[in-house]
Length: 263
Image 1 (spheres, rainbow, N blue to C red):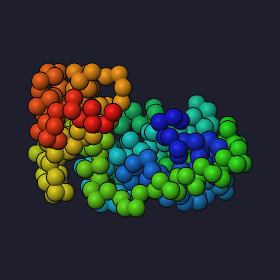
Image 2: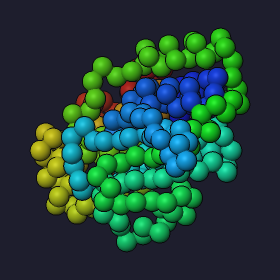
Image 3: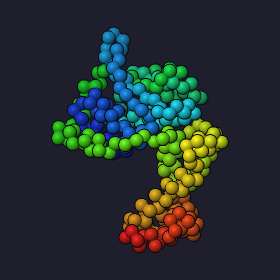
Image 4: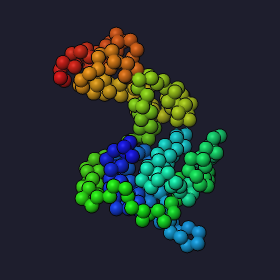
């Protein structure tokens, strides 16, 4: 739950799971979600009520759609199990793309039927879960936290899902100095295709990597405790001299001077 920050708190303190689900879909953009979400009521077998969470890409990019769906639906499943217990499972998962080579892993994770080439991406939930009380419901907090979420909503969505996806993966691996070929493999595209996508979005991998390294370095230098060498290692530089040269190239000042300036 902690990985979802403010949104996780808003969902935990909602009155029931149905309200938590609506809150999660409404404020998903504050978590950096790269797909557009909406809820649709469903009628299941034997006239049981249900709810579906539908996800679509703002800008269709079929090459990375499987990655984005896997990230979204798997993390959402973990979130729901954090709220409802490890036995939670959806009724059905439908995905718009062809079955990958590891398709059997989907069924093992979700614990339900998974259909590929379904036309759109959605997870169907039995309506019996919607009334389940949330573990930390608090009437006051359940009013205040959604308002904080509303204040943190982005004014505009990322211009390109591929750039946002690359940024997220690079941020998670800064200390390992990820290469373009590594990021492309995680997105299930080849290096040349990813380079072209980034060029079409008006940027390139080096610019993204350097910008994220600079942001992380400035944050670490502003805080106590880390040596210059440790800051460099945290963003992928094993040689402190290489880090100092790169930082001066980015900012015009040495890391130590930046630390003094921000202390």
